[in-house]
Length: 113
Image (cartoon, rainbow, N blue to C red; front, side, top):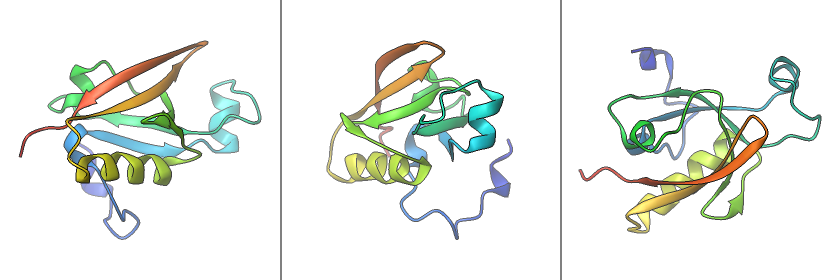
């Protein structure tokens, strides 16, 4: 519902098939969410309820810290890693997600078509 304000100019390799809207973990985000100063990753800003990320349990406010067991420092790296996994023919992508004080692996399937 609010995806029309995301211009494609900034998005090189976007992976809309799983339905995540990501943003960088900035100093303001760290402060607002009481995160450590060295927290890195991609903050899940929005989750499309009609896509596989939602069905897999990813929620706004989650922080993706690794994609297919490779650390990501920001939203661009996460987007690129997810897109690369999709291009390589994998059926799903493995995300390491931080939610509060917990970390969990979540396998998110790619949508067919």
